[in-house]
Image (tube, rainbow, N blue to C red; front, top):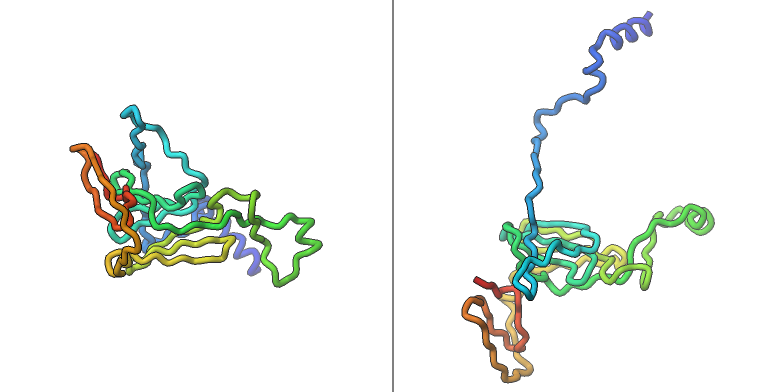
Length: 204
C-alpha cells in the first residue's frame, strides 16, 4: 500500500517540477557578456593594428588589487598585465615556468606501473612540453600578492607588489647611455642598470 501511495504522488506532480532543479534564491545570478576587441591589438611598425593576440593555451586569469587584469598563458612572457580597457601594460614579474607539462597516465601504463599511492597524472619534461607549459594558475590574495603555480615543477611563486618600492637598490655597475624619445612618448623612468623598462611607456 505504501508503494502504491508513493507512486501516485510522483505521477501527480507536474512534469516541469520533475525536470527542473529546486530554485535557490540565495545564489546570485551573474550575467556575463563578451567585450569586443579585448585585449586591444598592438600597433605594428606600419602604424596599423597587428591583429589578434597569439596566446598559447591560456590557463588562468586574475584581477590585481589595482584593477588590472593578469592573463597567464604557456608562451613566452607567460604573465601579461592589461588595463581594464584592454591596453597592454606589459609582462608581469620575471617568473619562469617548467619546460614540461602534466599528463594523465595511459591506461595500460597505469595498470602495469601505478601504485595506490600514485596520482593518475605525471609530469613530463623536455621536448614533450612547450616553453612555459608549467604555467598552471595565477591568483591574487586580499593583500594584493600575486601567486603563480607551476604544476609540473610543483612550485608556487609569491610575488609581492611593494618589493620594488621598499627594497633598496644598490647599483653595481652604471654605464653611461643617452636616451632619446619622440615628443608623443611619455612615461620614461630612469633605472640604474640602464635597461629600458617598457611597462611605464605610453604613446599619445
